[in-house]
Image 1: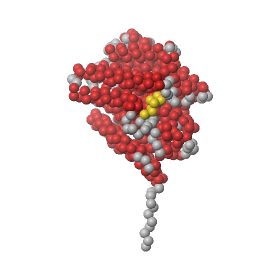
Image 2: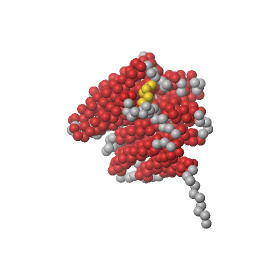
Image 3: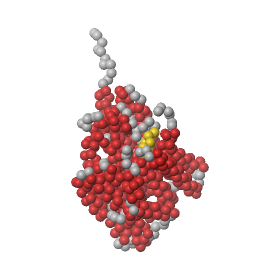
Image 4: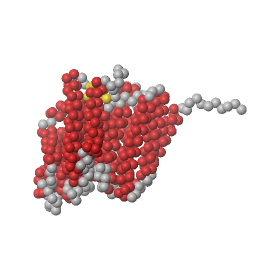
Length: 489
Length: 108
């Protein structure tokens, strides 16, 4: 019981250990062994090797749970849990990190800011996400969220000489640290009420508490505020458009998919697991946040001219859809959240990848006007972008439809008709601004710009994201089954 | 004149109220101050309010868990300060100002 570091502990920590090890090793290698700019390509190889080993360790965890047919493996005396849920989310993080690593290579070359620590930081951020998906202890979760956030502050400001990148990093830093303060205060109150930092024990204590306890209410409010900030849901979304616009585009992609998924994992674990008995307290607050996210996200996206900013507002509205699954809170809702985040990883990264391929020296390629007549310049890119936008809008036969379908199904099953209708109306709004981009690409006159230059990273990235977006839309059974194994308990 | 009897312990509520006040001051400072450095210090104040709550209840529950959390919060605050000051420094180098309202090239 009180053994310090058991083989089970090691087994459940291994992916995070590998990520941290490779992440730090890349920082060291970049500095001491491979300082020459032409040697940077070895670092991306090294990062992918780290991802491979981390993925292997995750796969072994998955096989272990299957072979022993146990629902969960607990380690570090309830500090970490390995279950289908954590493995599913970690699979998302691995996919996102690999995609971001391979699409960053050419982007950083073009920007003239190619430093090896970029790949190291991607791995370290993923290490933090690992603890968010599998941590069941407040300290672990807090450290995980901070490890992720602090690395993202650096990544967002990675283009040191770019004023917009600096500014984005500063705004993200201030609001991120502010929200961490709220989260920590919420955790301290949870500890105050229950006298434990371990979620199972907290859940047992909270179940006996009256729902009207003011201290508990304050704890729920502050924790929820902290986490909604991290998810990027309104009314705590102010950082998202600025951070997304100013950050290097691969980082924007990583921030919008992986960081969001990790924060949703914590929300699900805390609110559907530990705080489930007090649903009556948090459900109305979450419903308000969802409606605000849908409204602000969709209506603000209508008037944007910068594509990265438009996608930032669209990601706020996607956060709203994902949180709807949390409000429904049943099996279908949870499956919906998992599928949504999985699908979102590919379709959103794909959309940002198109922007990355358009980026060339001396021109940014992130205005809607830059896409004018893209179908004549690089038809492949235009068609791929259209596919990703259709999927983001939730139109069949793309993967985005399956994701939205499950979310709406769960709402109808639990009788949240008003929310379901509101959300469905906002899908119509979102299709308008996604089609504005499609119209610019297909109908507008071509501009002066050069065709996109795909590198090998972009080719692989496009192949993976487009295939996933189409394949999940046409044949969703495997992913539904995989998401089904990930349900809590 | 007999000595005034001192209370044996400060009641728990006092600590809670003090930490809530500290936290609120931190939030207010974050929202209303103009200088980047002051805004950043307000966040540290919020984290210290958290630490106070943890230590108080750690003492009350007779456990070390809360004390442990305090150390982690301190580490996190230090890491955030290290990265944060580096970012603030870059912003200052590129713009020559630390006033929050003047850093606005990304439209709101």
